[in-house]
Length: 141
Image 1: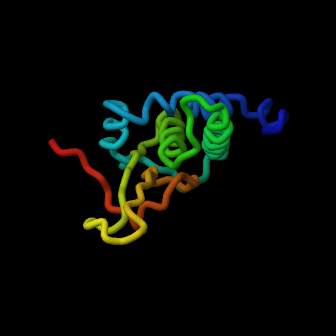
Image 2: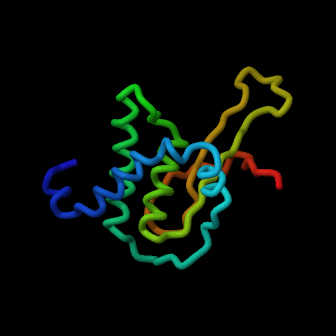
């Protein structure tokens, strides 16, 4: 991240980085469940929010860099999705995390089962997607 960008948009950088720092705390248990049960329905703007886009980019980059530390962070779709979800929450946007699987249910193929997580958000900003080919996992009541 360039110093000039950080100086012009300190709030976006702070929100993105803090979301990346919090992501490992949200990838399991009741916090993950609440993110998966959240609703992505709400007011959305058709105009791009450039400060939100920057915060999402910072969150993704920070997860990527933190994953190299050999500590709690991993550069996976779940960590990136969670960091983006937390950014969107911090900006007051309605979003949800989805986790899905794809593969042969009888495990007869050589490829096994693939898992993926993504963010559901109905705004113009770019987020972690790609869930259209996965069967969504759901919690039982």
